[in-house]
Length: 136
Image 1 (cartoon, rainbow, N blue to C red):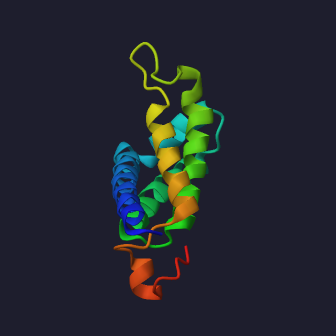
Image 2 (image 1 turned 120 degrees about the horizontal axis):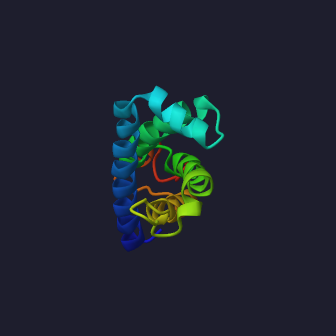
């Protein structure tokens, strides 16, 4: 991948990673039982809330570090699809009546899909540990 594309991937990795870490930590601060209860109102099993919170924090950290970028970006993309379909789609793109729409989740889906497809080696642990092979 050419240098300018690598630099743009770093920007995407860092911003998405920070966003996911903050959202994941917020779920822990709210109390995972409360988050599980909210997921239950959407007909989802409670364990999904725990999975999502951990994936957001761990996946966000791995994106920032550039460790398994393609794998974790793919998992986070699936989480964003679930969030859009199960929690946000009915509210519309921008939301209504003060509620949030799915615009943030859609942007994060686009970022994570891009990273899952292209990966990112520059300033990454994958590159430092495994060389320029772009393993994940």
